[in-house]
Image (cartoon, rainbow, N blue to C red; front, side, top):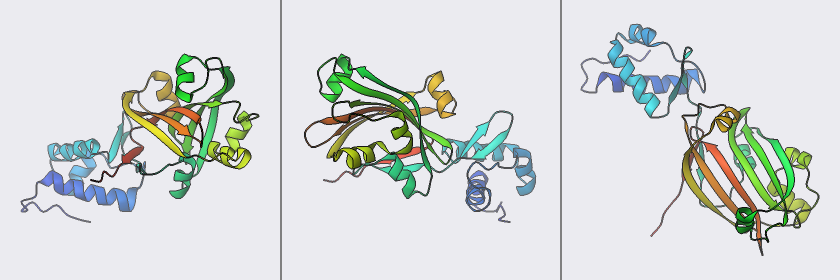
Length: 241
């Protein structure tokens, strides 16, 4: 067991943080439970104040999360999403060795209102698909998406299609439609009660709202509004001069 060096110039709580981080990575694992503050005090011969400071800093840094009445747990690792090229939730999860699932919450064919017609560049009243999906990886809800797709470009898509096949694979393989680019807008938001329940998270947890407009060769092929869990994703952009 790694010991605390009380003669070191490094503050005790920082030493404890390093020990706990190594313990979480090597022994406990994602969503595993940490020992109680009292047990940590006894194990490392530290005051409750020192232990609490280390725990609070680890929580602030996103290493752990607390469940009222149950204890403190190791946070799952965040998905590091690169924003330098087009990406798909399904493909990104597969690259990470996770099992992606899309649960279709609603599926309708509707007429585009003014807002949506402006987003996907069609006339108001045009027939479009509107569907909501809960995107899941390894049984953990990650994102809540609502998408709008022109019906005339992709006739015959069904709810079952979306449950069994990635949307972009449907575009490419069934309709021979290639994606050329996508514009995304990111905004920090707080979830409402319904969104938080579907994502299985506290309503107070910050999330990202992502608006994506996806382009084919000659026109917009998709508009999607996504709520992504703030504790599951981090995004990276490289800026070059």
